[in-house]
Image (cartoon, rainbow, N blue to C red; front, side):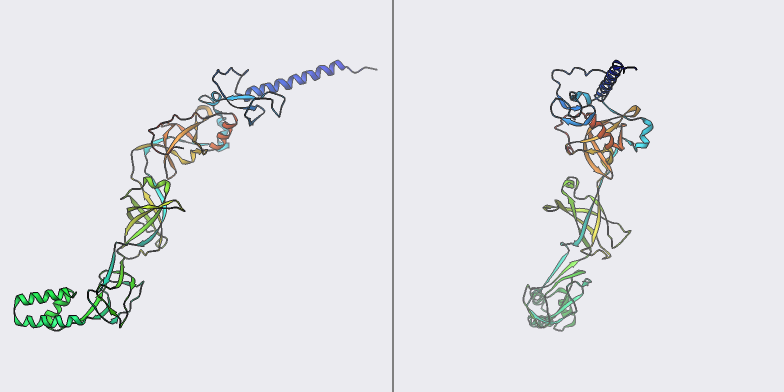
Amino acid sequence: MNRPNFNGFWLAGLALAVGVAAGYGVAYQRMNGEPGAAPEQGATSKALYWYDPMYPQQKFDKPGKSPFMDMQLVPRYASDGVGNATVSIDPGLTQNLGLRTAKVTRGAFASSLDVTGVLAFNERDVAVIQTRTSGFVEWVYARAPGDVLAAGAPLADILVPDWAAAQTEFLALKRSGERELISAARQRLQLTGMPANLIAQVERSGKVQPNLTVTSPVGGVVQELNVRTGMTVANGETLARINGLGSVWLAVAVPESQTGSITEGQSIEARLPAFPGSVFNGKVSAILPDTNPDSRTLRVRVELANADGRLRPGMTAQVRLNHPTGQDKLWVPTEAVIRTGKRALVMLAEEAGHYRPVEVRLGQESDGKTVILKGLEEGQEVVTSGQFLLDSEASLRGIVAEPLEVDGNASGSQP
């Protein structure tokens, strides 16, 4: 009967343990980005965090033993991931991963802003109709607030008793042929509030005309009508208020963050659901000083011509504010930008399938393009699809984008 060879079992177990330890050591070194033992860090180097190479996604604030394996945690230094560390992807797998890139471009940057607006009356085009003398309302024409009137449309007939005596005196003096007296009598008619066309009618016909027909001096919408048949009106009393429709105001709400790029005289394009396919052009006439505290928007006023009267207050519009093309600027597709909340990054594509994060300073954004103020150069390539996957991989490996230098004179937005 053969006895079991305990020495053989012991040797096999020892070899297996050595193999596992060696394998873990190799993985430990590879995940740490080192071909061998960890290089010595300078006296001034500071560890960003500690981690277990078998579980690199878990970060620790201080050294010690890993809770996953009976090994010491490994420090990750800033120099490990700045300047020379990249994420490497087999070029043959880029299509499978959906990675797409675009060049950093320098060129004219014409921007625009799409917002909403509401049409309103042009408050400068208002006619207030008042009496210039006392009288009695004999007739009111069929008008009501909201009616659209043409210029010269009659509103009411008013009897003015004081005019009868003044006109009688004028006609008597006219028959006398005394020019100075006739001129004085005509001036008196004017001072009583009689319109020039009515004075000419009296002088031409030789008959007393004590009735005044009140008409609308402009074409537009009746906003107020304060006259009724049989009522007595006093000198200076407001009878009606007419708002013209020759032009309308477009009240536009612009986000507070975009108001710095809005200027008076800036051109706009308005499209109304009521008139599909039609484009109405105008210019910014005023930037109002108050801001809506709820929506954090600033009101911008645009004046639109309305010769045909199609535009009516209350209609809504989609408005595009066009910014003039400025000087050449460096820009990338907006989809390439990764906003972390504290700064903005892009994944820079390098040769042979290598990618690294780069911090950038952003400028204006428009039409899917974002201006780059600092961090990139013309001709470089950035990842526009799959960049978040690469950023996650870089974060797991501890690859950190080098921070931008502080520039006190830089203009534009600071991420």
